[in-house]
Image (cartoon, rainbow, N blue to C red; front, side, top):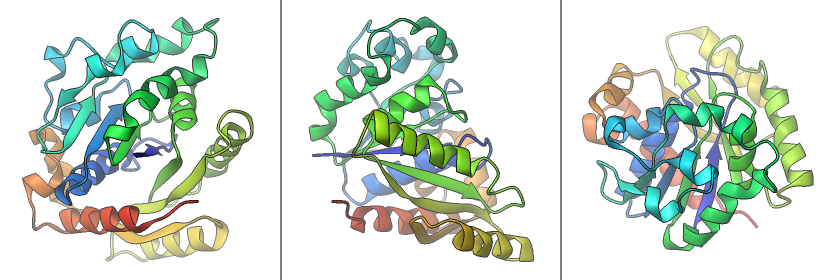
Length: 255
C-alpha cells in the first residue's frame, strides 16, 4: 500500500513545492513509483515536473468537483516513475464551489484510495494556506511533512499548522501523523540559519529530519527549466540534499 504524504506549510516561500518536486524525483530515482497530486492553484509542482499547463484539461480541480476520476487526470512527468495529477488556477475557487457538498473534506481521499495501492508514495503539494484544499489533502494523507525555511520568522504560524493537523486528526483522519520537519534554504555562512535550527529543535517536539536542504542557486534555477534538481544538476548540493531526504523518508516507519 502506498504511503500518502501531504507537504504543507501555510507560509509561502519555504520550499514546499521545491520539496514536493525534488523529493518525488529522488524517490523515483531510487526505484520507487510516485504519484504527485498538485493541490496548489499556482500549479508550480505541475510545471516543475516538466508539464505544460497550457496543454492540460483534466486537473485536480475537476476531481474535486466530481467531473472526472483521478485516473483521467493523471499525466506522465519528465521523470521516469513519477506520475502527476496537475493543478490549475480555477482550483482557487473550489472552496466556494464545494459549499454545501456532502463530505466535501473527503472528495480527494475517495479518489486516492482507488489508486494508492499502485504506488509506493503519493505526495500531495498543498497550497500555502489552511483551507478546504489543505484539509482535503490532510484527510487523504497518512502523514504531513512540514518544510521550514531557515529564517527569522521560521516558527511564525507553525503552531497554527500543528493545531490544524491535530484538528484533522481528531475529527476527520485519526491515522494522521507528523511525517517530520525538514529545514530548507540553509546557509552555512550565516549564524542565523544555525540559530533557527537550534531554536526549532528546542521549541518543537516533533520529528525533525537530519537532512538539511542548503540554499543553492542550481536548486532555484531548476523549476524554470521544468526539471527537478537531480535532472538539472545531478551533482549539486541541492540534489544531494534531496537524495538524502528521500533516503530518510524511505527508511522512516509508521505504525
